Image (tube, rainbow, N blue to C red; front, top):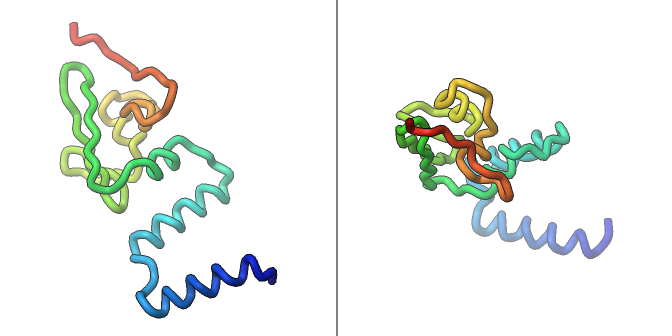
Length: 118
């Protein structure tokens, strides 16, 4: 193994032994990211999860009703129900297939879907 790779690895192991390893939730999140990357999915859902920290609240008005989503360590919560993806929530709200990150405005250079309140 090359020295440039070995030194940071050993330093991390020393820190891990001294201070403890990653939290279980962090390890689970990293495993999920690794699985998504193994499937070669550069999905917007994955990039949204990387940008939005647990504790964040997302708001979206749809058909005159305000919807609030709470980002948790394990996914998302909407109206007291847990969901694994924003897309599931967007489908629940609209009744049609939406990209959750696009619906909640988490993707760059994309306009939000709108529905008139007429």
